[in-house]
Image (cartoon, rainbow, N blue to C red; front, side, top):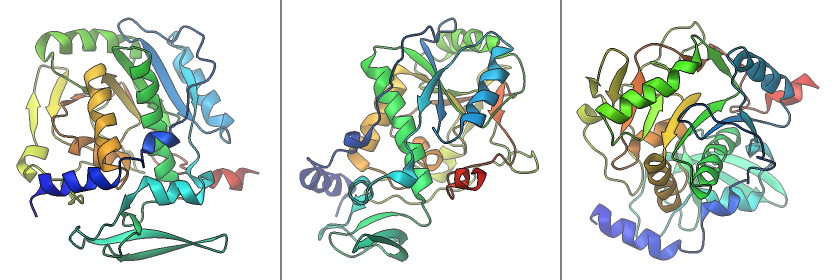
Length: 305
């Protein structure tokens, strides 16, 4: 079947299973979290990780930046029902897919398996997608929904494993430059690439098929077009530690996930959003901590107790 017809069938069978049901509200957002032309600065932080919030807050406070702390969605605490509803539910009209992750819930216990995507009524995620990664996606989407509903035009989202490499006060000036040179932009990453454990950049070079979605060519996603000395237009990349998102980008990303639901980690999905216009700084301003302590793969915060 043609991809657009598959999508039509998917929408017909998933009208009531909106993932926004599991978005988390931004509570007590009463302070001033602006920076120049940025309407609100958010930092995603698990309640179980106060030390990460303090570290992030202190690193930004040096530059006179006061972010809003968003209480992250803890994927390790999501209900069985949530896990069953957030992913892609296989329908009779769907073609069999690749080997995917299955969370089976039997008598109050959860069992994780890796199976070919073909069992009708079963919820699938990409291979090895963890509960922590699902929570990370929901955290980003919750912020985008809050920002969109709040009428914000431009926001800055950070995770709590950031490294400030140079003065973030210059980010509003880069946004102004982008507004002038590429007014259709949606997302600006405040670094060049995500950094691996040894501090070296990890470029994204391949794409993986996503059920129900017709992808562009690999050449399209590998695109790198210099806009000016500071910014490059890109087709794909890894990492979501620090992203500036315009209102148009908020809507595109939210619409995508509300239709296609969760399947890949966030940084393998946002560049698949149709029509998304991505840009990255040519040098690091705010980037990720190399080899930072993450709770995505496992609830590592439990080891701190």
